[in-house]
Length: 479
Ligand code: FAD
Image 1 (cartoon, rainbow, N blue to C red):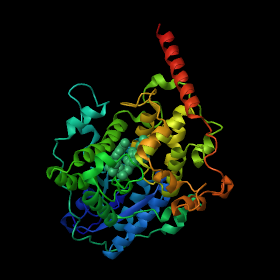
Image 2 (image 1 turned 135 degrees about the horizontal axis):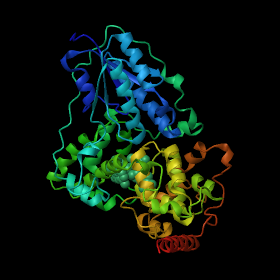
Image 3 (image 1 turned 30 degrees about the vertical axis):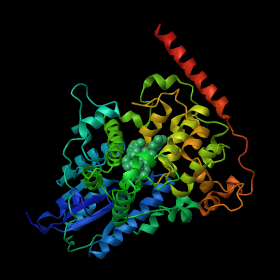
Image 4 (image 1 turned 90 degrees about the horizontal axis):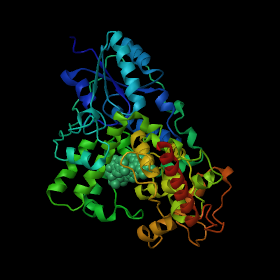
């Protein structure tokens, strides 16, 4: 084989040079590599905030490549066709990529692989964004794990391969193929007024991701277990954002955190356990792809969730009159991130107090989250609603007032995000009003809190009643 023939590396959600299996394979034996990023349907379908964050990741990665004498080639179209055309333009005979494991990408990748192979190209895909391939973890009996704890027990002592270092050289091809211009893709356009506000909160790129990891390990991991549920404390890693764009890998996180585990850091085991919830989400997504779109337990199909509610806008806009819910929804809108405990509370309020279908919340999160991940988002929503595997039972209804008293006793989180009623509102709380559409007609001068759109005790009773009716109907049908 001619070693000077370039290899095409199809970049997707893997904006890094280190621990990148496809890239390392592409440059082995000193072959030139052509980095190709494709604006396909998956990219067009991203939610508004994720799309803006994706653009920032592309921009950062592209600049990094340029500083190393490389280029990121941008093209639009159907991946198999684009990769075929670029291979013809450059004389490449090989294509590599890192695998993505959600339903849509798995199906598309199989089609792309088959089409390119038919064209005579050699195609190789590599383990991507997970510590273990979803099909490599299986229980002694049964096809897959439905419950997290045994899943964790089965993987916790497994050997995790050491992360790869970044290639020393990224040889460039003799001829550069044409590239589209990132700005022309208009990836931030869906954000409207919120774009400038969100931009301040983004932490973009491989170097930032490593800094985030090391800051967390030095300052926060020891107290992770005790502090992680308090949304006002900087206690969690913030790594879901760079993990989503592959700016860091779970191997790099695992490997760095292991050292703290061995040194006896009290929070290390708990942190690594959380990292495996992400793996569990992909395990479920692989074995039960319907988790993204349908009730995981079909018995919930007849439950009386509604597709809408007169209070849905209030939930989305953070003005339900329930301070913890409103603070969390505003944090989401401004930063593209919401604390994990807050995700559970707003999810419970929507699916239980308001009796709205979990898929409505899933879709709103997809629109607003910068760490939007198809597997974790679906699993999270089905867990909250009670219809998923290893889910919180439906009758466990979070009481946002009690949650606030326990996890935000000094109202620090509430005050950070709610401007109304404060003489000296925080910059974050004010920035919410800069981000939201004018059509929402909200003002920081309104009285707060208004009467809750759904009273906590009344909503809880209605939810429990709906649950009892559902159970009674099911039992009647069985009999
Ligand atoms: P840390 O507490 O520092 O945890 C470290 C890492 O472990 C995280 O970065 C994440 O990769 C993983 N992790 C932790 N908790 C979970 C969990 N419950 N499920 C899956 N992985 C977890 N996470 C996403 O990354 N994308 C989503 O779209 C998403 N949607 C969610 C929707 C709902 C309704 C719920 C309840 C949870 C959702 N989560 C999602 C999980 C969780 O809220 C975030 O991963 C977490 O808040 C990220 O913050 P962190 O990086 O500081 O986490």
